[in-house]
Amino acid sequence: MAVYPAPERLRRTVVRLATQLQSPRRRGHIELALPVTLGELAQLVGVSREHLGRLLAELERNGSLRRRRGVLVLALARWPECDGKTAAVGP
Image (spheres, rainbow, N blue to C red):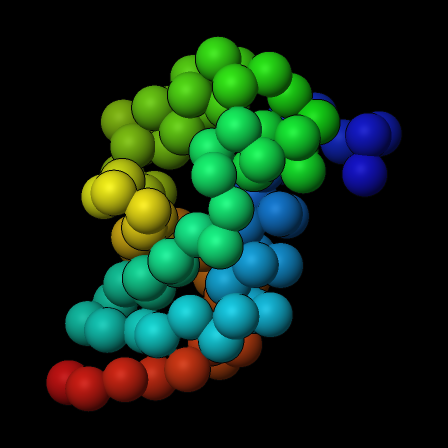
């Protein structure tokens, strides 16, 4: 995956985790409970913890996600690659 730029590697990693964990989908959002620390996520993506923080901040700024303690809330409209691949839960 190192041939992809860091933002794309992060997207691919998040999609893979959301799919593998069958993250619940609610009201246009996917709630990805991270099974790893942000430091470990940074290692999976191949960036420093600081760089990961900047990447996540950019995704927050553009409305792609929100961060809560241990959870990434993905705006489904901005993550079409997750649509239909995660568990639908509730209204």
